[in-house]
Length: 224
Length: 285
Image (cartoon, rainbow over all chains, first blue to last red; front, top):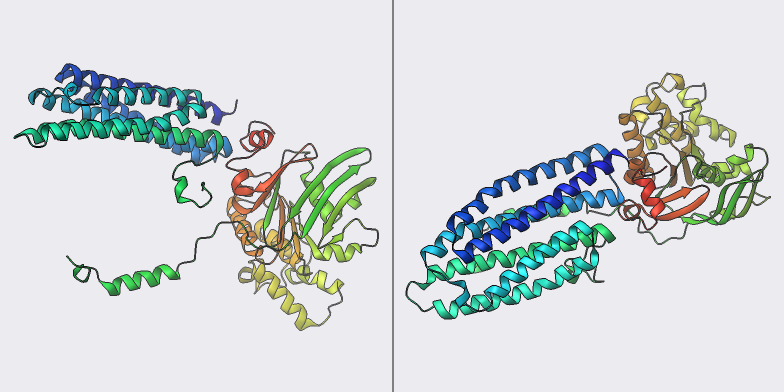
């Protein structure tokens, strides 16, 4: 096998490992929120710097491969996809870390997420979508990628219901604003993770087919 | 704040707008002319004795564009290129079937005048091959054969061709100097100038940069980009990046067959054929 392909395979494995770490970070952050474990939340934040370092190293390797091998076709699409997915995974890890950091406020304000509508559905759908995103990336599977894209509507819907429920319950309560902000920020992080999973799924479709499926509405014939 | 109160310097905005309008509009490196093809190959085959050099090649080559032919050694890319101006006639026992036409004229028609054909379809080879004559005489050689004797007319042709081949500035004071004293890159540009001197419509280039260093290669590639505004260029290259850089369309040949032909931007990012993908990504070939 040519050296470029060997180095690309290693990069894909590193990206897969990063995906698993990110998935773990989100699961740990949500567990910390539910159990009110402030230290566990901080630990997610601490582990984020390892993911940051990995993201930078993966990107550097991509730049080296572009400069040294001038890749084309599937190799070029693979590198472009890795660069984008790498960045989105790192962003998801940041959002997981930001959820982890908020556990302290959740405990201090005595927030019980279960009192509000759809939080369980929001966390479950987001966790499931991220898991499927990582598996789809590993299998390079366009059908799975489309499933991930479709899940984003469910996440958005759960997010809207949860925010409405929080605002209805806390909006007019004295001192309720801070608690509401903490909850909405956690929910917003989950909703953003859904968006980033969609980005990754769209990149997987590009990798497999060469088609750019995002922003189809911006193009007259439905695709760029 | 109303619109009138917006703290924007309108003069500056107009200046920026003017500046922006002055910038060359970004255009894709794909010719958009709607004129028909200059070269039409329809089921064209060329045999060396019993063996097919190329088989059943069907493709249209468009004017004012660069078409690259790529493929592994022995795939027939040079055979096809050399068929366009019948350079293969020099090889014994060659036989052509199917149709290969330049400007509507079947080049394998028995009535074709080979000298006229090669005036219309110029060729640049892998290694620069200037005649052992002066720079001036290299370029004037073709026009003299065409019967042009008037010195002022020859001067005009030499100057124009050297300009078009981006060699004028370097050579204008040394036109009497031997062409063999030029550097490799300059010699290749001289060969391009010589090919232009007979007024061709089509320029065939058979690995024109393979004997040149990266700087000389860059100059030839720049020249190819300029020349395509006036000429139809077909280039055979082993250098994948060169094909990607300079061409509008790319044809991939393998074992004498045309495997894929399409816009270069598509062939190099998302080829439709697995063999093309394997070749351009270095997995075989």
